[in-house]
Image 1 (cartoon, rainbow, N blue to C red):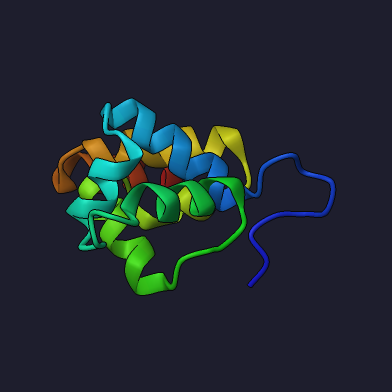
Image 2: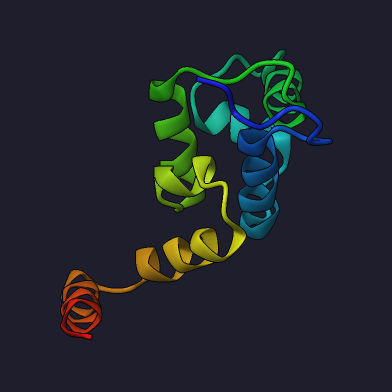
Length: 107
């Protein structure tokens, strides 16, 4: 699956990954270690994900999302507003998300 459209300076997955990592205040090497990468190559691997040289397998992306405390969908979302909504909804309790959904569906 392509992570961005041609012409983007940074592929979508990499852009979202960097955004989430910086919000979490975690360095590339530390993130790599936290998702189980070898310490000697962790920074380079995360850098390659962020710059679009490589895109991680979904299993690795799930680990990244878990460590960064963002929904997996955020890392692949191509709409900035929707990505922000995903982050906010992820921070809500399940009960609050259900109430929000019910409110949206009733409009």
